View 1 (cartoon, rainbow, N blue to C red):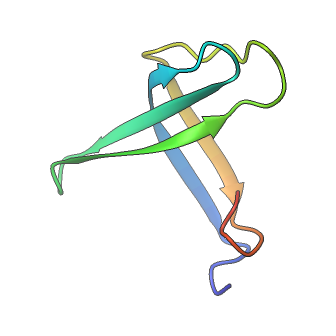
View 2 (cartoon, rainbow, N blue to C red):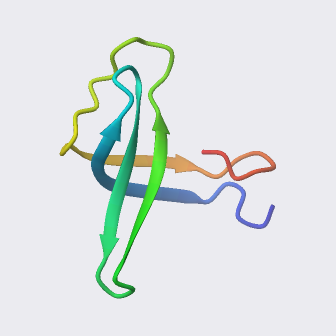
Length: 69
């Protein structure tokens, strides 16, 4: 609740797609020497155009009870 309404930016490189409308993006953090990633839902279309190797930036606001953006 305390973070509701805050703007967030998530960026990464597509490392896997489902062949339809969604993908998984990942980013390497030099300081922690770890990879972090997020699953991206592309909507109801049959081809969102996510290709492995593409760089993606997602901006949004934290909303709802579960931090959904």
